[in-house]
Image 1: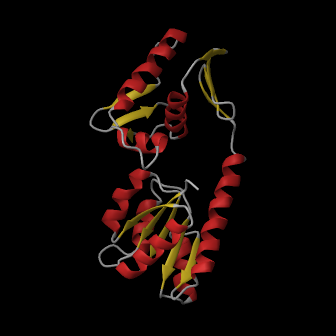
Image 2 (image 1 turned 135 degrees about the vertical axis):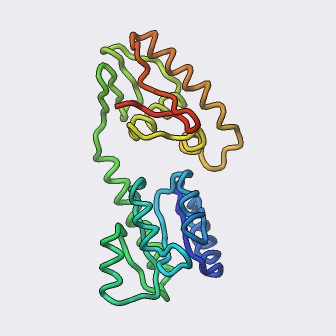
Length: 226
């Protein structure tokens, strides 16, 4: 498994327990003890969040609303609050599931697996091609075409193009791109993204594109233009 799961809980014992349990299942696990730390961890691109409701400072419900402004991945609430109103509020602020403490670890694992499988099915059923003017990106065959002619890209270059294009209009940092393409455990330097972007731009320009569709966002990173 390569899915990344972010656990947010201010109770260290629960945080450590879940971290070890999910890591044993083969997931890449991230953790945070408060809202601010959780928002910083989003740059690593988690595929699912497990979120405590009652935390000091920013509550789980407030954090969920913040996260939903930029991230669309499954969020499972964990909470000792067990009334119907609590569960309804959790779903209304953007949660996908709600599990009451104390909870069954086996049930939590099954819910995590079910949500990830649902996301995988959704991804498979999504559009296979992206179109940007004369640019066509075939997500299934991993090919990019400009004005019907194929632009030869390395696999890393294509993965960068795919990530930028699928987040069209959003400024992504070099670190975000690097972690997404090379993985969380990669030991290289995100500065390599600059060279790959340079090569991609050169290939597109050679194919005939005059105005680069990949713009530099100074102090931030890169953006695929609409």
